[in-house]
Length: 158
Image: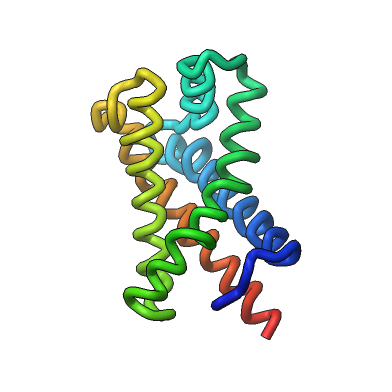
């Protein structure tokens, strides 16, 4: 999927990579992090807050739906494929994809905790409380896992 176009097959690969990356994010934030005594993430709560602030229906199911399906399986993978990766390849070349994936994950964190929290009426970056740092690790992990899966799929296709 180096210079691939958005096809039905590629959308499927993005969906798979987003699924696995979301599982890694949720495992980190809801199992591993609290397991070592750090904060527990509840990204569906942020999604619920966003829905409420926009005057849309908001409940636990919709929060999970937005977090898992809309964001984790669709929006973040498409953001990589359509926006970030083409810019990275144009500026840096098709190299250093591990660094690119970590930077992308950092950008997702800035977007989520810097932008979406503010839009939701919550403190920007959640006042840099412990949960913000757990979320940083989770978003960087998401980016790394998603790109690693996409690269693994691309190698299998070659």
